[in-house]
Length: 107
Image 1: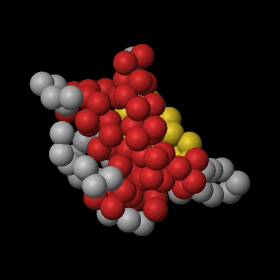
Image 2: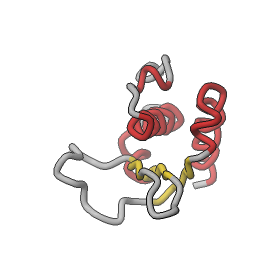
Image 3: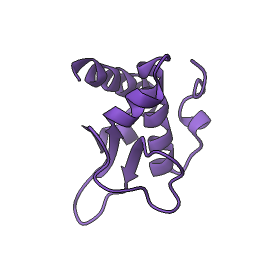
């Protein structure tokens, strides 16, 4: 679990270089698994979710540790964590993942 958190911190640090101001206003959390099934528009296994700011709460990105680890068996968990962070930040900012991180999708 500690190693996963280190991957999250490294991903945040990488994205902060380019998106520091916007990312600084977003809380990032890790949960073991989603607390509910995916919504109809969420295809497959939910790896993360983005929640826009509302009712005085800041925007949040939640990463789901177990699904990410399961999906990245044989691969790099660190790359998977970064990709999910990029996808969720792109969702919150209304941008494409490659605009958030030009290295998105490339190990």
